[in-house]
Image 1 (tube, helix red, strand yellow):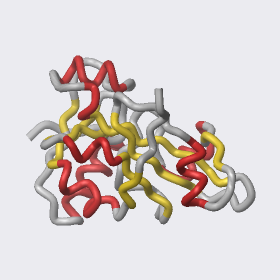
Image 2: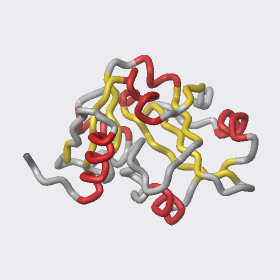
Image 3: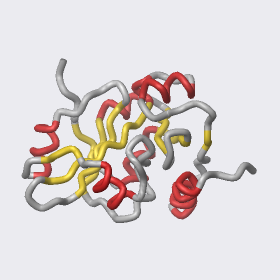
Image 4: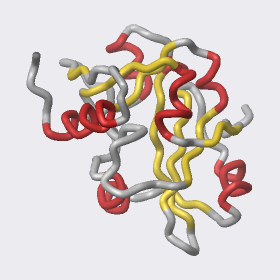
Length: 162
């Protein structure tokens, strides 16, 4: 059993506490971007779960959007669900809420609970997904059908139309 970095260990513990047998892997190459992750793992870019944190403009609530690696987020689509304008979270807000740095944010195991979680419907077309696990070098895979159960997120259309 390899020793995981502190951040990856937090994610592994969160998975175990949810009774999930998914295993965090730390890789030698970066998985910081969806393209990097897909190349390193050897999967399609669309199978990468990008965990993007936003905050609501008025109430400063965190909003986690789990997006297919091939898609860009249509912020207006998210705002229809949050009922207020959203802004991309900065590095400090992201670390304060999740406990992780941008580039390694997992879909679960955050320092503070996030009640507004939205899942890109395009992720569900894949059998297996890959998500960040706390660092730009750590990932875990899970069946797409488990993502909603694992995160409590709402499946919606989030992608920007091209």
